[in-house]
Amino acid sequence: MNVFHTSNTVVSAPDVLHSRHYLDFGPGFYVTPVKMQAVNYAQRFTKWGDDAYLNTYEMAMPDTTRFRYKSFDAYDEEWLDYVAACRLGLPVEQFDVIEGGITDDKVFNTVDLYFAHIITKDEALRRLVAVRPNRQICFLTQAAIDTCLTYLRTDKLK
Image 1 (cartoon, helix red, strand yellow):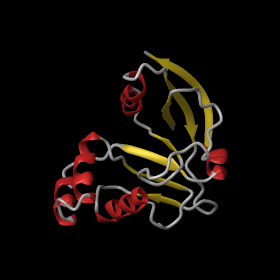
Image 2 (spheres, helix red, strand yellow):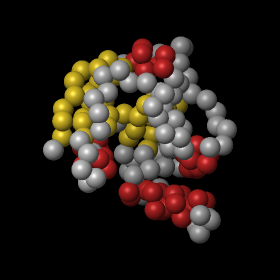
Image 3 (cartoon, helix red, strand yellow):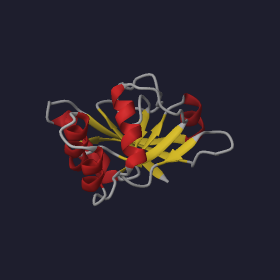
Image 4 (cartoon, helix red, strand yellow):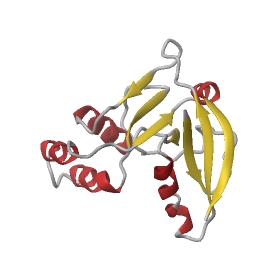
């Protein structure tokens, strides 16, 4: 399966070292199987006058006998608790690869209100249950990246 990563640079050799902290699934290398999701993310670079590149990789599913793999299939309590802990920098169960919903614009407002204690967890879950998750895959270890991702190409976006 092809997966995509948008950046302001070509990323032919992805790694976990250049990640920011406090992301949905913690620091790692994030890709998505949804090309339009990656292209839309490029606006974060282009609106500030920076270049944007769509990096494409072939992804092999992780061998679960070798790598710890977690899939969140919905915006549910388990997903919300994990994302909340990661975004706050709290300890979480460790995985090599995590797949699940992204905290995009449709979801961020609800999650932000929950983090600010303006709405309860129950209210956040009621709001999130109707949202179909956009997918992201986070590689948290270099071994998983090296084994599962093969760089294919980079296209400069306009």
